[in-house]
Amino acid sequence: MDSPQSVAFNFTELLSKLLPSAVILLRSRDKRSQSTSTSIQPRIFLPKSASSGFIAVGHSAKCLRVVTYSDYRKVGTSMVPFRYDESMDGQQYWVLQLSDVRLNPVFDATYFQF
Image (cartoon, rainbow, N blue to C red; front, side, top):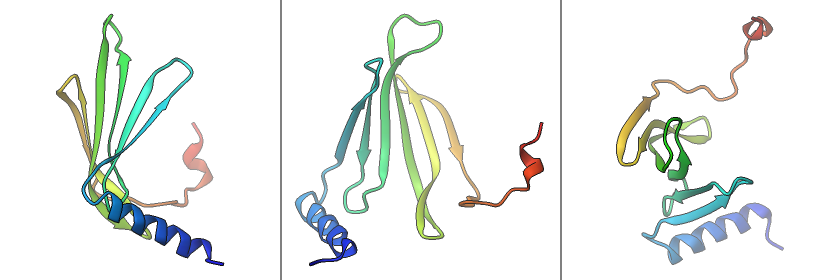
């Protein structure tokens, strides 16, 4: 019987062969019927973007919000996006460019005291 690691590898390899250039699209819906779509990059299986519709404060119509993830870098054993771009209805809203990422940092307990 295959170990779970080899099964995961075979599944990933199979998807890469079946979907060499297609973007995988995942859709979800919450309790308020708000839907979110997430596109996954082929071969590397990392999020490329997430989009959702919502009603912004002061607006009566639904807006389309898209967050795009890019500039992936290896941090420890994980791949982390160092750039996040958000647009609303096609207009750039903000960009977050990270310069340093620490996974599971240790904080002194006083850090959380107010």
